[in-house]
Length: 235
Image 1 (cartoon, rainbow, N blue to C red):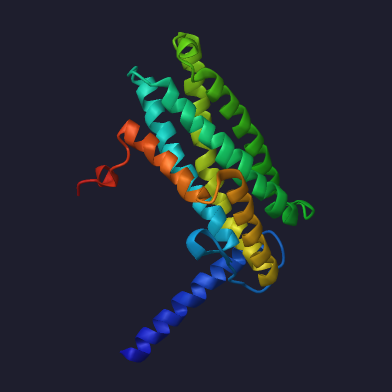
Image 2 (tube, rainbow, N blue to C red):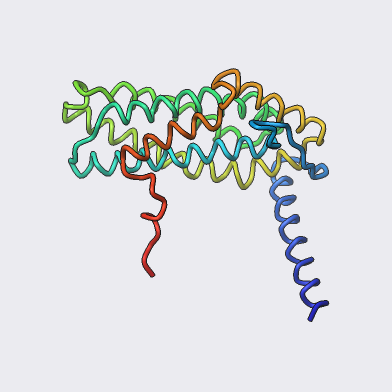
């Protein structure tokens, strides 16, 4: 039994690693896997890829905020414009002006010169997302939101953003980021981790990531989304 268990565990490791390498070959020839990290907040080591993926975690929570506000709008329930405005401001400053800029400056160039259609699509989606965010911020003002046509336009932009960004970040997490990590040497990944951490602290302070998460939590509490247990489905 012990031999069988060891064989099964080895097979699972082989399959997991093999899948990641196949994702990398879909974009570029595969280099050796590397695990690298830099000291982040409180000296906790955070790798470059972990940094990007935890930023996606912030995005996921902001998408839930957008989804709740969209549901309230379509159900003709009262919506606080300032709550939507704060959410859109976080999307703009943390996701689009920080996270996406990291991707566009450090990740995408590795693939654009090799004709990656995936990266071309991701870039177009970043551009479209910024247009949606501009509209959402412009329309999330009480005097503006009161117009039926403006509410209709706001609903369309929220739907457009939600419909695009969930598959967008999923494709980055499962294809682009594994391919990048397989391609880039460990020393360069270490340097990237330090660069990402420095940029985050420069823009958002010493407690950068935690301070952003705290702002998201306040939005969740305002909308009644903070209690995770409410999402547990009865079986």
